Length: 319
Ligand code: SF4
Image (tube, rainbow, N blue to C red):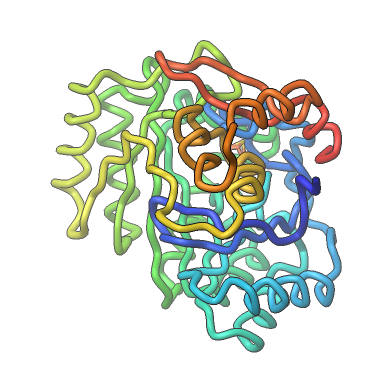
């Protein structure tokens, strides 16, 4: 079964509803190596923009998928790495918007917004979600583990410059990790940046799925509530705390395909996966055991819950 393609899903997202995903950069090519990344460790830490998949091939794959999946809310650039590393991003967004009626979203770590070409590319999108986990050097380095040539002041300056010129829907997301970036002084500093960005919505989240580093812990509920309060006071928009996992969507044609597509984006809780597969399979546990035996998936426990993640054989295909 194919685990990775230019287009995957649709998958259910807490911020975008039902979204057709676009995988425009290779697995774990990223400018950050976040400790909480649910895709695993960054294998190619880079800030060099370059061409990956062909524009025509990708646009054709999207239009093809939309003939089958008419109900999606967004077409989203949400690859297994950083989407703005793709030098053809601008053209890809523009062509998808010209050829389809769906809004285009890009979920970016925002670390390359100091580059004019990246701001220019993202200006084409209907919605951009930017990551702001820290506004001070130490928490930024500890949580996001950036490429050595990135500078935080330039990253923040790029974020502000982009937000000043962008006319689409801008949202921010902040992931808080216990002991790394959940201190009050970092929350106050980052809420100042978030306020300056004037987003349409702010999302705060603890790591809820197995992270790249197994020692990563979510902040306490009390600290999350404090962070929510501090950020809410400094912005004029809705601030949402996403601290639970979303259940599988109510209807899917092919739950096994959905399961594998979702796993290429993030781990899935075991009980959700069983519930999902039961819709079409009489013995979902046997199917999961078979996939595990073939190395396509594996089980990982995190914060008292069991998750399914991609197995060695799947990762091998992605790399
Ligand atoms: S969470 Fe996003 S930005 Fe961070 S390492 Fe993973 S893919 Fe890169």
